[in-house]
Length: 406
Image (tube, rainbow, N blue to C red; front, top):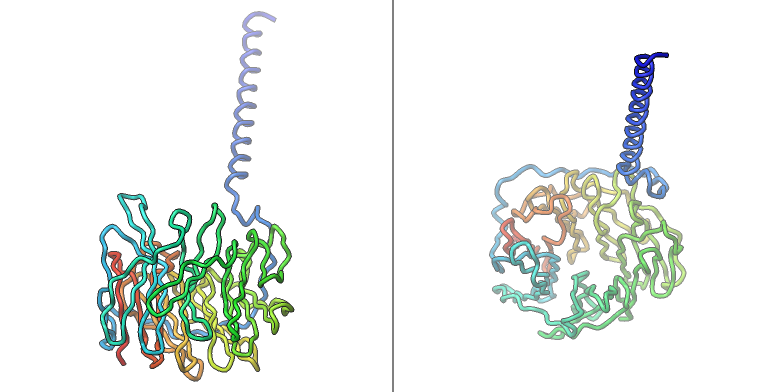
């Protein structure tokens, strides 16, 4: 073999080695791409499929309207440049006095420099008082989120807050006596919902470490890693029966009930693939022990009603389009009212006596900066005379109030 032949053989061997290295590198990159770009659904524990249920009946979708109806009057409550408002909660006294609580975030540039819980009152047929900060007993540790605004059986207004103690989330309660709010009372050093029974006793429902669903000291689910508790809503009817609706992460809404708070029914699945939830379900009492349930799903806004002698009625699709959290309240006649965000509009509908729904109507322009994840920017209350009151955050971060006058 001469030098030329040897040179040619060496060049061929080198070429083959280069090809092998290139193929190996491409294969490794492709494996790395697959490993790091597969969907969460392919690597998360498999969640059992949701059962097929009766398709929801559909309410009439809203027609686009440029301006609210003439029976809707609105006014500015509060405007502070450099602020954002969220976690709005509204309640109406029997004497028509309104109570508003919300969280204010104050910015410098793109950074949040302060977070305040504000409280404002509106006397009957009066003007909103300027919102005042609801001071805290532990300002260095208590950074609260407004979780729920509720009433004790005696009518006293109470606010449930979630804050932190030593970096551990805890649940607090504050109640209003005439014009003064009580100091924050520690309910539990866990993330929990609070509910009052007809006898005035206080109960809690929550999750321990995100996995174990419990009511008071009674566990309702196994404490397992793949049983992530995401959302909880609880109510007690006038007979003292307890009702609890919760969601497993990525799963359906499930319902439990109990006559004594200790022995609970097996879970009843309330949603299917079409009606599966996105935001926290809203659960409220109606008349004669009935329940109202509304939630924002991946495919719209949905509603179900529970009757003591019939159980859960089929779901109703209130709107096929949604861009934020649905808010539910119940009027003195026991009928439900629901608001939600649709694009940049505050939408409203009310339940009729025959369990149908009014045509959804746009009430005002709202802050839609968070898109489909919008929550806490709107709230609704119905007073003892059936008058409907709305509070919302406008697109330019101002706080507005409106009322339907007819």
